[in-house]
Length: 279
Image (tube, rainbow, N blue to C red; front, side):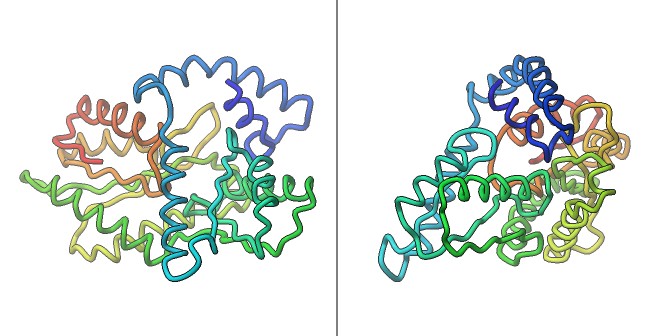
């Protein structure tokens, strides 16, 4: 519940002024906490997101320090809505006393609701303790060669596993959804998702590849980015084609992949008559 409160109390998520946002966040988080607990119970009672992120940070530090002082580069983690949060990480970095800081989002595509909110949280925390160090920000990397090549390699493996029937598989690139009004106001997220998908498809270079970008994880009554992933799955059932599901906006496993994609959407695919589902 505290995690959910921090999420919905973020003005980048709910734009109401306080105290209305605070009250609404308290209401939503209390209502959604039991549902969230049930979700996490399906994957052992907790999210692997932090452990995965620690592994990513350790791997990056190892690469950066390959040819020099083993402590020349340090990789710190700041989570947005639960620990370690930016204030805790800023304190650790101030003790480390770096020459410069690079902020690296683990969201490949930029949105003001994700990377933008995280950058703002970081700068507020740094200002609060007078951490005045030259800082660079990596905005996003929707078409970065390393990212695109790695995703394409995994997609090729999925196609190889799925291509066993009469019909070739359809590749669904599923990204976390966003309210349509946020994109209409100028957020570049949808455009960058499309950039990532087109780059991966180009890298695959498979003639007549059947593919589609779609969006998952919508909540509430607002109009969200379309097409919805569940509708794309139902259409695949009607067309009788197997599915290769690609989480194009995520760089590690968590409830949206391990529960929503691996359990809930797999069940929907089976109910809809999809002849094969490969994530």
